[in-house]
Image 1: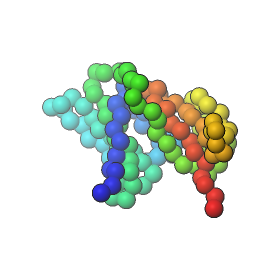
Image 2 (image 1 turned 90 degrees about the vertical axis):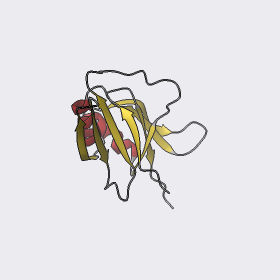
Image 3 (image 1 turned 45 degrees about the vertical axis):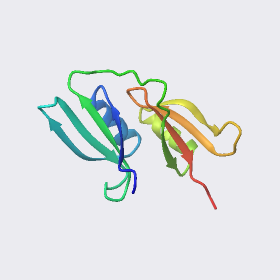
Image 4 (image 1 turned 90 degrees about the horizontal axis):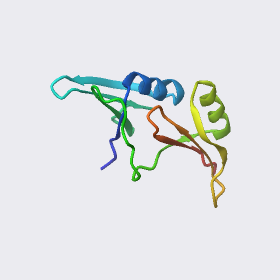
Length: 129
């Protein structure tokens, strides 16, 4: 068994695709419209779906915002250098909501940014050794 994807609902598919591809560096892997259901699914990730877990961005036609709720936490992405990643993402238009630094009660370097719909993405420094 393996995790295939995580689905999040987005209010503007093109805006979200721009964020995940231009700011986070993912690739759009596939997209399909479902006219009978009035929704579009787009899958993004860092590698093919056969070998990697990806994100499914679900756009329900005509719905431009969602209440994220209190149960959802964040998406985590490993990066080589959190400080450098934050600077690059900020320059590309990303919204950093917690600057790079040590996590609370630990030594791991982390940061958080927010996608256009308010989902939080944690950047975690790659472990060495």
